[in-house]
Image (cartoon, rainbow, N blue to C red; front, side, top):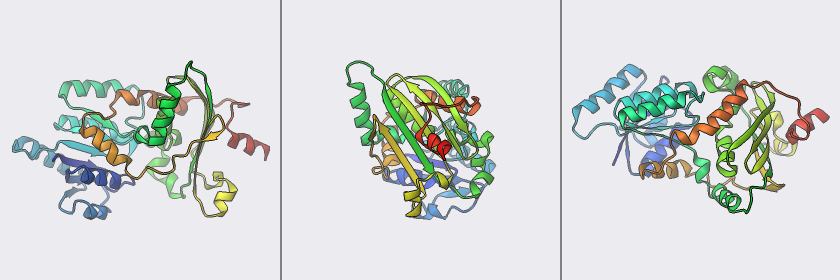
Length: 318
């Protein structure tokens, strides 16, 4: 049984990490969050210590490390806002623990070398959650693509709309310096998935970028990808919106829909199983996706033609 601490206990994704810690037979000893709206802990680890101040949490972790009685923290799970991930991973490793960090691992690719250096210095490992790589439908598609004779390019359309209320832009998620912007905050795992399936990235063009939506064109070794991301409910297709649906996800390969709406419920637990078995995804695995979103964030938009996503061409037509 391994001892865990968790940073960012009040966040949206934290319960999945608590569930994964419990499902893998381990224990959460302590959690940290500036907000005290963390009653969800009671459903998983009611005896866990809780801190709202980092300094007290730091002292607790260090006390356990120095006691050398087997009660040290083995892993720190990090669910904090994106811009804090880098600092919290460094804290974990310097405290003698491995890190399990939500995506995006970092906001900028130049931070990757620093993390690899601290891994070498401490002998501890940084793991990240790239759960789509473990989804059975994605695994099947990757195997199919990689088994093809020759490296022909497939035509891929990706659309992901996950509508958010007015609160979104007033939170850290609406601050590009803290979240990395929409492509980073809601799209980074899709960009990692595309790289994982279709190989090295060769071209990255941005057609539209705003606080609430972004779109562009990516070319990989084995794919030409038109992509569209949004948190605006108006981008949910009318038929789905009228039925009360607030999210929309579609990925087609050569015109054929890839169905992977199911199978998500246990992917964090699967990720933890792989990490604990020494087969987790590390810092180097994240590089292409981090480089992709950083480029999207800083690139100038260009006009689109046939390479524009259908959602863009539809908007222009109306």
